[in-house]
Length: 539
Image 1 (tube, rainbow, N blue to C red):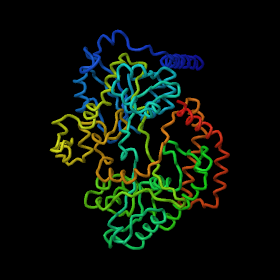
Image 2: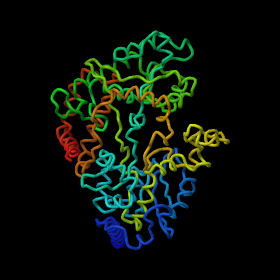
Image 3: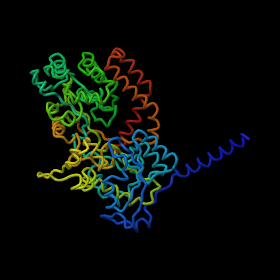
Image 4: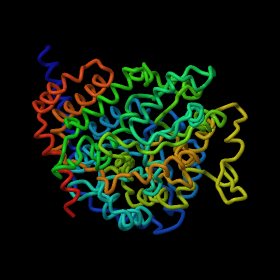
């Protein structure tokens, strides 16, 4: 009886497994059907003559509207396009799991929106035929995105997989929007600097002297308990100082690899002498109480509370006035890159224009790929950017006397006492990020667009690294290899960085650390990574 029951269960499993495999079989995309093209308008609105419905899987960030089936922007867009989107909202904390289930079961939506598909999965499911190649569709039905690719070859490189196909639309940062692409920037409390009778720090030694003076000199005159440097983690300060020690000299997209300035060869810089000196410098700051003592474990809300109270003499973060308010935030000004012990003085963080490659992808289940391409392409046009980030003129925004677009008072000053973000998400869906579109200084009105953030970026711009590397997509085989020992190496580097800085691991154990990394497979790691780098420069 049990054997018979087991046989039935096995048979059912086999049927389900076979069906799932059949759904994910590698089938070649042959282009839009004649039926779809007959219903498609080549330009303008509506996109289709007779209404169609599409099922979208959408990643839901905590800051965004919880249900895009009934939100102003997409209700309006349905009227404009004649395309009804059925949104399946997936909370970000379960996004990866739910996305994998969709691919694994073969029960695919028509498209993934704001779903953060990584390059390894784009390659994997593209090769299997579950995600369709978009090259020809972009050429014919996405004039706005096509123009961006033609004007920005680096963006085209970043979204093109090693097999030559484009499987997704990305989240792009406008290439000239440096305040956004630089990420968190360094700020210093100018009032405390003046109170201490000190000039703006220009070197790592002068920065150390300033932090020490904040600790010992009480520049707030008892108004707050001073903390020389504070951050949400040690990572922002570490990132700021990399360029002062000649590290990450090809930019943040190179990961842990840059160019050895002496030999001109590729270098795994976390085992270099310069890196060792950087960690020793940071350990000095921490051991002398110049860095917030619980920076390795601080709760983000506690950090923001300390930040808003004006307790920090120096920070590497976003817009002070937007977080602290005008009264306290105006005390802070941007800092330059710091010159290190050997004359290095660069700012190395410059995010790729492509921030998320797999922000939007069309699946093999979609019977209206050309219509879907026209639907998404609008959000890469000037008109579409204004619509996506600002909403509808007269309902969510208006134009001031100087021609600037500004949100209306009912959003800026909620009648329900809601925060700006909470009020905004009633109408728009971009809060929380991850979306397929392009952030621009004109339309993306967030911390990076504030006057002090723009000014801080201008202060750092002269020290930007030259010719930074762009993102380097790996082949499926490379990604599979790196998921093993490559992930272990990167995790070990990160863990040991914190231990060396905090003093949990003495610098006398440096050689042991280097030997451990080499024994973990560093030679193979470098070969895989440099192959991807070389592939980017092949054209």
